[in-house]
Length: 253
Image: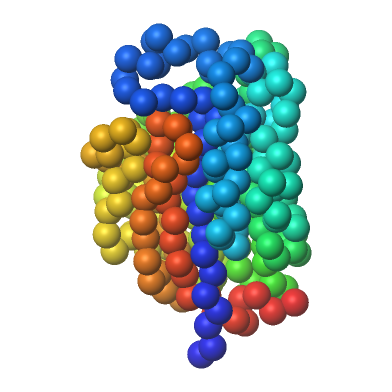
C-alpha cells in the first residue's frame, strides 16, 4: 500500500486569550469577554505554528463576536498561515458578547463538509467533519470539543461513533476533556475503527501539563509517526502536532 505523510495540528486556542496560571481564570476573566489584550499577537503566533501543517483543527476559535473585535479567528488564521481552504462551525454564544467555534483549515480542498450539533445537558457543542477524497475510502477528518461532564461526553461520543462508524480512513481530533482510557471513550473504540493513542501526550494545563485530554485518534489504516505537544501562544492548552501516514487511496479525487 502507498502512503502519503500529512502533518496535522489540533489546537484549543482559547479565542486568543492568555492563561499562564490557574489564578488567571479569575484575574484575567475579562479577556474572555472583551477584545482587550494582545489577542492579535497570539493569533499571529498560532498562525506561524499552524502554517507548518497540512490540516489544522481548532477549538474555541471565536467566529466574530465582541470579544474578538468581530474577527472570525478561523478565517484570520487561514489567511495568515496561507491555508487554501477553511471552514468553521459556530456552536456557542454567550449573550452576544463571546462566541465559540470549531474550525478546520487545510491545504487540500475537502470534497464535502458536514456540521453536526452534539447532544448534551447544555447545548453548544458540535463536531465538524471534512471529507478528503471520493468514495467510501475517502479520508474523514473530524474536529470536536466535548463537554466537561462524563454523561454528556458519553452521549456526544456515541453520536460521533455513529457518524464515523463506516469510515475505514478517519481522524478524530480535538479537546475531549478526558483521558483516552476513560470509560466513555470505549464507545468509539467499539463502534468505529478508531484506536486509542499509542502514548499519552500531556497538554493541560499548558504551564504545567499533567493531563492528556487533547487527542488525535486515527483508524487502524493510518499510522502515526510522531506526536508532540507545542504551545498555542498563551492558551491554557498545548496544541497537539502529529505526523500521519495516510493511504493515498483515501485522498484520491
